[in-house]
Amino acid sequence: MARIYLKKATKTSQTDATDVQATVRKILQDIETGGDAVAMELAQKFDNYTGPALLDDEAIEKSISQVSQKLRDDMQFAHDNIRRFAEAQKASMSDVEFEITPGLIAGQRMMPVRAAGCYVPGGRYSHVASAMMTVTTAKVAGVHHITACSPPQGDKGVNPAIVYAAKLCGADKILSLGGVQGVASMTYGLFGLPQADIIVGPGNQFVAEAKRQLFGRVGIDMIAGPTDSLILADKTADADIVAADLVGQAEHGYNSPVWLVTDSNDLAERVMKLVPPLIDALPELNRENATAAWRDYAEVIVCDDREEMAATSDDYAPEHLTVQAEDLDWWLSRLQCYGSLFLGEETTVAYGDKSSGTNHVLPTSGSARYTGGLSVHKYMKVVTWQRSTREGSKRVAEATARISRLEGMEGHARTADIRLHKYFPEENFDLTAEA
Image 1 (tube, rainbow, N blue to C red):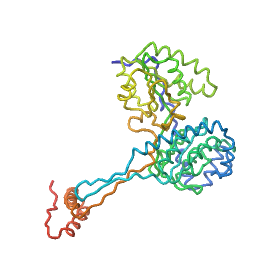
Image 2 (cartoon, rainbow, N blue to C red):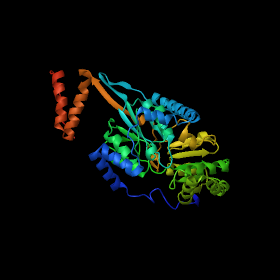
Image 3 (spheres, helix red, strand yellow):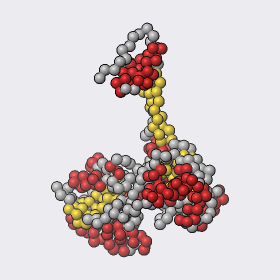
């Protein structure tokens, strides 16, 4: 079977990648050394912001007052959906207690992290939905302290709708800082904040690089690249809807790949004719992004059959995967590599991005091969415990002593020996190692 490319990308997400490592490393070092003062200097330098880092109650209420009731109602609707789905996710997790052998009991506990930093992009687009996605899931997980962080728009500060969304969803503090300085402030615990245990949320290449460099010192959800979307469509798909969905995702950025995979050459040709005029009809900024994304990063692939379509999709491991084809249950059971799946034309990626309930912080650049997106689970630690009766520890101690000596770890072996001699003084044990 062969894949026929009617349109082939001339660039990949790595083509225009800028080496920002040194820049980010220097900024992080300066902020760690200089603390709050340096973070504020950078806010003035990069965002022309001279206001306070943390919004007080008065500033929050002032921002909230600028949000229309209609928009508040829409955000409440979206928040309720996200919360309900997150609560269902949490319900799927449970503590465990199990008697492994008589007298030896082990278990696991599900524990939320203590403090989370939720980064909300606010530059070219103000991602109100990202505030809801990140803060809501942290709140449902039971995180003790949640900071929402978003770039200020000059001295106007954080977008009022983002402030409202963060407050609605349960943020304890709202930080008016962007980029590396925002991520660093939450990680280092500047401005009186607790040091974050995890940093989550999308951002530009500097935010992604800061998270990469800080990983280990702080947990992260993922290192995100440009957003990407793939549509699987057969001959029954509506070409107008397919084209609109491709354009809708291409507007994210100049380097946001969109892919169409189909077994219908006719559908592919129709969609390729429909896309350019749809892009031309967008507002200027959106049009510039979509034009570049479609020209340089988009692909249209024709396959022999649905199995080859599914295999192609799994190879790409897209962040967003839409199926507009017959027999949706087959696709649901067959597809394996994606961040979030949208089955049928009655749903679309934008629904998941904004208000349907599933999370939109998802793996990009093929990382859906090995990970899923942001969820309640990302804020939870699975910790284990054990206890034992003396009789229950007997066989474990014998095995531990001999395995430890086989590995050359005599100190480990003796911690088992001492218990055997204390608990069973009348017995003789052969605790020597045999290869």
